[in-house]
Length: 476
Image (tube, rainbow, N blue to C red; front, side):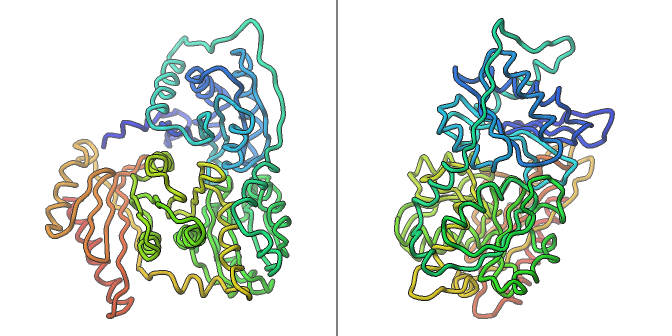
């Protein structure tokens, strides 16, 4: 496989590589990722920036302070000022970059990866993640600074270190895009798992300002995860019953850096991350009609909601930067990814669990009485979704995926093929996305089929058959 925007740097200490891409860096702390590696990557980034300070934040993992200290020292040594936001959600860092007119920002986070990982995510001066073109410049600089004998640049006068808490700015921006009084009038009881990440920093003050009664767990941002941090149904099974036991109207789950949100109903039934974006799009379009953007692996629920409300739904390649690029090009009023990542440009051009939970609550509180989130989810268009992966043998890895993707298209002659990101095949009521992984020698297959008059079982059977045919075609 060729991955032009992602490089794997092997370490003798680990068989798992350091993943260096145009959007950031990720590795195992103490093995492939050390303070020295983080410092080189940060300096490579700031060398591409215009004059101005750098904003720095972290998601609460135990390794965060160590990496932050190395980054601050190296960046300050270049003569650039550093604004330390300490523990903050990833979208909050995007807001901080904008609020402080910074040249850029770095969030120390491995997102939903297990505790042994950490990483760096990069922000441009607009408070959004880097474009692919800007990321390639950083990647080239990092490779240059990683060469034997290379040293980090220093200036005669080191930059200054400052601290800033951007929480209030984030809360204020979210308040401005929802009907705060309606939420306060209903005073919903909310159960939330902040996952021992940075989400509690913004979610708890926001929920308090919205007048909610809150039962919160995992609020200490110490990175001591009580479950695998990705907010999937499997990982959250032990927590779901607590929502009903607490008598809450809704349950929210944040990932460690709080850019994704999953939802469960009052009975503790997992509604998932795909429903998050669809519900938020419905909430925004009710008051602010306009184009919507999703990536090509997002559930058709969101596109169906947009069609029902008479607005265009544009599709981008997978990746937050691609979604934001398309949102700006189409003047979208909302966008996001089906992993629970909602992007509201009125707040910040970053996936944001805080605006997502506020929009869902506003949708529940729109009428004279509180509408159960289960009813809202039941009214969404119904689809069956499947996700799987196919391991690639050495021969396919060496030759690349081109031949396999060609066989895939030939195996579905009546489907419409789109090659902007792997191959996406569309047919009436359904689709498959097949794309190589950036991090493993596998192909990921995501598929969906609308539930028709024949029922869910028939839709699932048809989708499973399509996925099996796709896997066979890829494997040769």
